[in-house]
Image (cartoon, protein in one colour):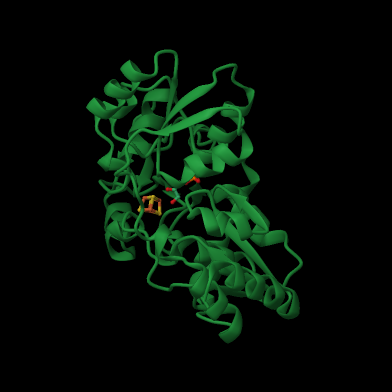
Length: 303
Ligand code: 13P
Ligand code: SF4
């Protein structure tokens, strides 16, 4: 079916079924174009908790839909491809976290929202890239902190606020694809360009950057900056989002290899099938959801 026909059907069926489409900033262009709301992990979590619609089509990855399902247990949260996972979220499981907590009794557990519901159920407070610094900074000085699963986000926070943490050794495979030489070459080709990178990159990339920001903050920064050219060190989908918002500016991916294959599993065909079948529904067992909810709610309170 041609894309225009698919889009028409999706928009019609969305109205009929009373559904809303949320999409992360890394989604493919055609999905960004039909979404009702686009955003970073924090925006989307906040929205999921407040939207009127009973059916949420989540165009993102599994932990995002799971977070929405935990915040809105009475709604139907659909993930058009249930195989769209996040390898970083799967790098720590509940048994591993429990073991670490037993080793460090009394430590406060902060987990990146890129984690499973079972892990969140053992967490004191979650964070996203948008509020990680504020969340960690809010923890009393005399408390030890367990942070995971992203060692690079954790390491970056530690440096910013000069605070040691017990770090899990997870990482985002897509962000690790960016190489320092790629940024160096782009800087030579585009003198005066601003290099902004996501805190999921590793320190060798961070060292090449002018500024480190989550995707929501990249949007704000690019809008407010006087610069006209930006080298964007995160998943490639972000450049489309920025170009649409600021067509007068130029956005260049730091690496064409920084692709999240899971984010790209969502397609117009799968969204239409989701609306037709009202599935696949993402559910979280009640006991796990109840245990995870307060860590997520504490997270969305942080700006
Ligand atoms: P943010 O949009 O919160 O910066 O997250 C990036 C990410 O990797 C989501 O999986
Ligand atoms: Fe997970 Fe990385 Fe994909 Fe984000 S970009 S969903 S952290 S694999």
